[in-house]
Length: 139
Image 1 (cartoon, rainbow, N blue to C red):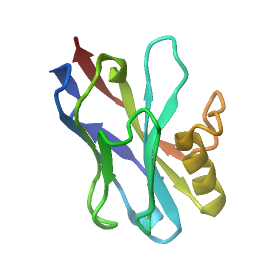
Image 2: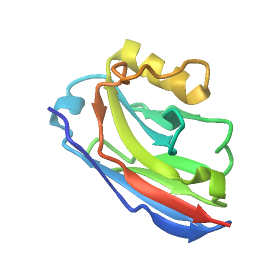
Image 3: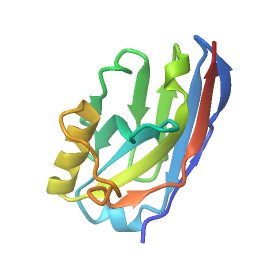
């Protein structure tokens, strides 16, 4: 079982920056093709993809965060990060770390982040989820 634990959320003003982190137990992921991503969900809204990265470093971003957010992960042992710059009030949400195993699940994860596919409710397409960390941007 893979455990994902997010940290680093908080409150910032419009235009500010934050970095959220996702620590995970990598044993299961290391032995398989996998990808990881960040999702967010604001009250009353559907969960949406923000950014994703494959184990070979290929990255995908939602149009709403391109040029402002950067997903990073140096190697299989380091945490997953989301660097968020020029934050806007509409970025306020609970941010979730997620991991998918296998090419098929990773393809779905990237499609959700690109906005060409919606997550199911519950989001069973993605194998593992963290508990979330809150990001609040004030105007």
